[in-house]
Length: 344
Ligand code: SF4
Image (cartoon, rainbow, N blue to C red; front, side, top):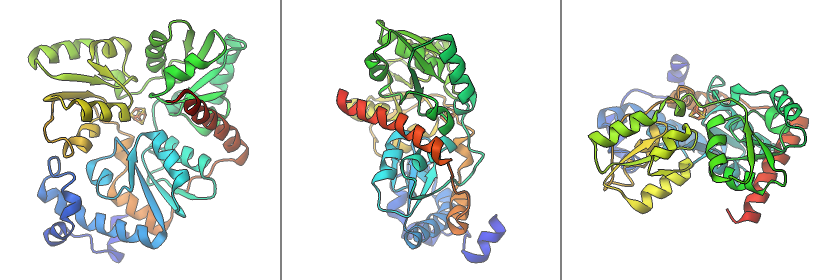
């Protein structure tokens, strides 16, 4: 891939180019060294030029590395924010810097656009934990109960569900279901955290989990708090409930960004994927982001080189069977409509 690209683009490290596009570097100078920026700059320039040529837009998830999130993305956000953005932009091509289910969701909501995935192997442990057969099994176990499915799933699973949810609206969506029993898939921890927030519902769940968030333990948080008094602990609801209980705040990636931006704690530990803290660090110089973090191996498959290759060759196009896409779109649209109705 590199050899092929080098025939068309000058990708040698360039301190001169790094300086020339220093305004982009200013958004990540706290977390990327000048030497690394000189390596990234030729890729960033080539991608941004090619983007204009192709009438393309790059959507960067909050878990992308800073050179992708700040260097080439036109929009950053969580998976749903990005999918909604995909429907709003006037572009012919969308490059999804995230994982496969996100690109599928963009394609489902914007079937007329070409959606490119820079690495088809960028999967997700949650999305891979359940299939449409799994949804059918849950329906057999709990007859009549609606299926609320997290957006971190394949199009096939969304199509087999009644409505989707995100980590920011899950409790309200589940709470608004008419049935007493509600099936949540595929994240057992998100479901358990939601169950605590909607005690009037009997929430039952599929046993999937996120390999990043399930690694944290409540003991880790207690010990960290002892060693680092005054640090604000902020957990994503894909973490196990005892971890969420130990934290000072729990929210989706956009909820976490809002909390840290509003509160500006002196020290904060984000109990979520590593790049979150890196991506908001320069915008919040008064906050010291501390503590260990876990990387998502799927998200980290997306690199500048792969993005450039996908845009250059127009490879990695996402296709979703139209019948599946239509049913999946309905499940996502129901969530969007209900969220609006509930004022979320
Ligand atoms: S962080 Fe977890 S939920 Fe997100 S893509 Fe990685 S494995 Fe999936």
